[in-house]
Length: 118
Image (cartoon, rainbow, N blue to C red; front, side, top):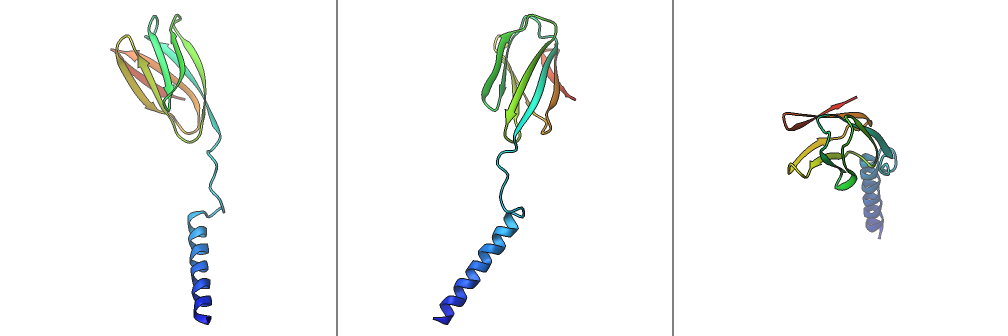
């Protein structure tokens, strides 16, 4: 009987040590909140049909009528992938979103889309 109680205390101690090792703050963060981005379609997109997707969710789909268009985005959770789709050209470009949010400037040069983060 004493051996069973000693074994239970050892198992409990191992579980507590494992818990403190994996979760040093006591619990895991729940998602990380929302990150805010401003995506600017700066050069070369005029008269193109553009579709912006973040993590497989369409956030903007329109034909660009001006020389420069700004699209505000709010992305919840950690990390993200921005997909710039040009359906008429059958072209997709992907960019990893910065973790801290900010301003993203997209430019189309020689048929390729480039992103600058500020």
